[in-house]
Each structure stands twice: as structure tokens, then as C-alpha cells.
Image (tube, rainbow, N blue to C red):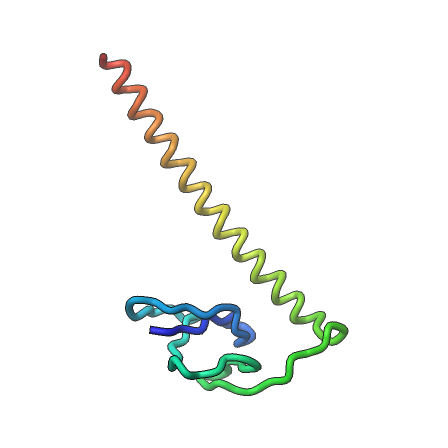
Length: 101
């Protein structure tokens, strides 16, 4: 199944995925394999055409990109935090096993 990943606030497409099964996330929109995502936004449940802003006009879009980048960094930080917690538990288990020998 093909999905377009969007920024919910703006409807802007930020990614495209081919997945093995259905996904139920508000930012993942199923699309046909032959649907062209270029210059499209997903607004109120419909795909609408738009003209991309030039570099000078895109201050707000740059801010959106910064928001997306910040979300990605937060997700990465959460993953690393969870990994650190798992590493600590594993280290404690190993120490207990060594102490039992």
C-alpha cells in the first residue's frame, strides 16, 4: 500500500511510503500508485493543487520544515532515551549474573 506522509497542520506532503499493510495514522494518507503527489496538499480530506512558493516567499514553509526537523529530533531523542534505559536494565542483569557466579 502506498501512503503520503503529511504535516497535519499544513497538509504539505513530507514523505511517501510503500508499506506491506494498512496504517491508521492521521498523517498517513493512502494514495493510488499512479497518483502524482507533486504540488499537492491534503486539506479537509481532499487533495488540492498549489503553487510552491519561491525562496523569498517561503519563510512560513521554512518554519514548517524547521518544525518537522524538530519533531524528528524529538523522536530520535526519545528513542535514544529508551535505548539508554534498556541498556541500564541489561547492565544490571549482567552484573547480577556475574555476582551470582
